[in-house]
Length: 201
Image (cartoon, rainbow, N blue to C red; front, side, top):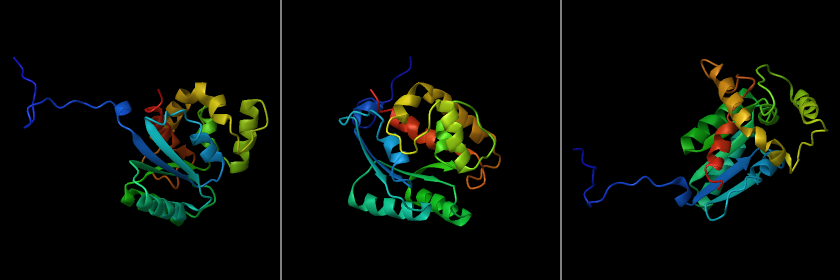
């Protein structure tokens, strides 16, 4: 007969449900409005998790440095840096990735642009396109003019979110070896989305 493992204090270790633990998130975004508006739309109850979203308008390396300063001021359980490959240099992008990793921060990057995440709600896109083409493509897919700083896009795309997650995962699988600065298109925004979804009741 198998016996349950007990620790030195005499009780069984119990797996704690994510929702029983109040988490504090810091999400710092390269963009000042597009990304913050999206992540602020997640309906996470305040008694379950506190989400501090900041749109800093900084290049990736500076963004990670700012996250480091903010982490010194407050105690956060998870720190996420959200930035694009876009027009930044490979050095700046790679430096940001390396420094974020060294600090224990997580990165939700997009190569080329954050709008890739939106497009993946509708279709699997595995060809790199310029930023301006993302805007045109989204206008076509949404059936209306895509507004870059939209405050309603989260709700509009919500029902297709599982499709976007699957498409983002499949996109990453196409690259071997995986080199984020060169893998265009690719994104890890879905990792942050999945983490926030754990706290939605």
